[in-house]
Image 1 (tube, rainbow, N blue to C red):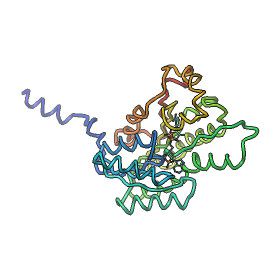
Image 2 (tube, rainbow, N blue to C red):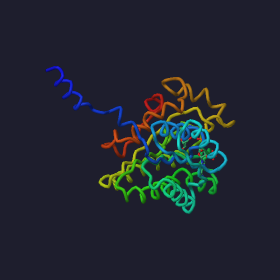
Image 3 (cartoon, rainbow, N blue to C red):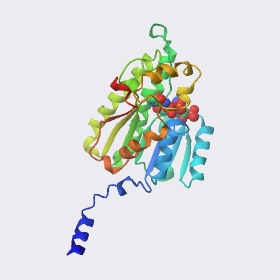
Length: 269
Ligand code: NDP
């Protein structure tokens, strides 16, 4: 009787842990050479993905992909400028020519640029919006064109607390604008592709310890930033990986258009 019960219960298993495995799935991470992007690329690789690391400086992408290869992860380095359509299309072509398809895309490449709104130069606007907002548009568009053919895809955009609240960084109105656009665009894309097998979600980090926040202009602001975080510390890149794996895996099959805040409670205050 107990044996039968065990057999029935085994069949009833949720299989939840197994669903985190992403063996042989193809993932692309823009801005995967460093910081948040590298951590997410490594996590996807550890879950079984083949991972394409794309970034603006090929040397950085190459070093990152070699680090993954040294861990036994199948990795490919690609040079891309996410603000240029031809470059983005070429990136997708490289991935699909190499591995035949794409299942998971993390649109993470981004830059931070500050300055008073009234004096913000037009060329800096073009650059910031070009990478952070147009970049996500171009990448998601190209990714979806391939994913729609297989009626399957998991797109993860990287937003920010700056897309939710003002003043997280110093004088970052245009950065905030770009990130609010990413969060809104995530929801719009999710709506368009909801019945076509593609989920689109966003992760909005708070202050994470990366090169971006350790720029010499940012260091004098660290103590002010720390005092505004309920957890009183910066996040580590590893603390974004769990959410990324959830959004990349079939476990999030009924989740689309979400924005997952990972910010030590920052937007609570
Ligand atoms: P880093 O500055 O550490 O890394 C930036 C990455 O983007 C690098 O891989 C860089 O490539 C790549 N990149 C920059 N411009 C381009 C471009 N035009 N085309 C392709 N790749 C490009 O940033 P983080 O890891 O800190 O940030 C990653 C994302 O997370 C960004 O979108 C950022 O806005 C967001 N974010 C970060 C927070 C933080 O506290 N760190 C907080 C909230 C959001 P390369 O190495 O070749 O130069």
